[in-house]
Length: 417
Image: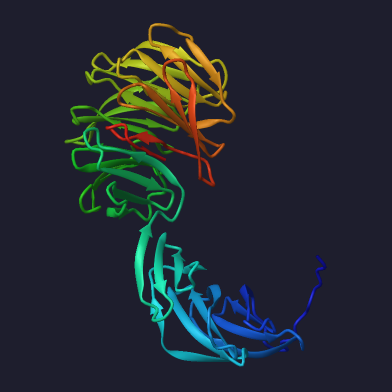
């Protein structure tokens, strides 16, 4: 393939171009700019043929629509102001509006992709929304929603598998319906930094944030109900609600463990033995004991009533990224910076078994039955393991970034990542 460079002449027409598309006859090039206009260049003469202002928020995406008219090109333009505009280039160079050729969507229109039968266009926006648009009349229907940034945590209610909640670096909390994956409700805090951990309590979602606060959102409406300030200096890194849902345990960046009464939102106790950030917390079914894992390589078992440590597990190298307590309340499975899947007995200080991983795992969950383990991390691959024997059963690939959190549904039928 021979590649050559062409420089087009535009004289005083100076723009920063964001997207390009060729006309149907391949003799013209259309360019969208940050100023919101589309410029048409004639390739043979290397000159500007025409220009037209189409949006006030800059052009984010541009596509040529199929047409039976060989003497013109139909353009679909996604704007930074949320507009989706259709114009026609007569003789492939003269830009004109078309009747009913503009609609407004939510968020910047960042991507356009035509369907295989050429009758529809899939439209993506910067707000995490995707629409299906009929090309003939620009009628749209919303087909999916998502966070605008990476998901930091996922959780299920302890007794329900029909919904789950996620939080994201964009500062949003979302509750999803598992029957058709539509959003039941969402909440947002614009000045709280990033939510790092979440847990269900009754019909509410309690979350820990990098600004050191704990915030509670209504699980039905997404409205923020209350917050607790100065929970941890440097940010809340882990959080777990008790089985009786009367108290919660939080962990901080500096290794502090704190127990809070949910009703009064007062601190009940402060436990300090970890020396680095807390990464995971599990509460025993008796609500009298808890496990905490940290970047300091330790998993500690606490007697909450007497506020003292009763057992300690220490990883040989690297911090603990995540762990899970088995239903028998005696065994623990963990992953960490040493890139191993480790199996522990709380009565023994060293791991019973360790399995080498291909990359560093950041997240781990165990099924309600205790038979299966799922892990994910920097390798971007979800891995399913059999607890008995530690055999790897399956790999799931599809993510383009690190897997930060995983969770089995209570009925063990699904895994959310």
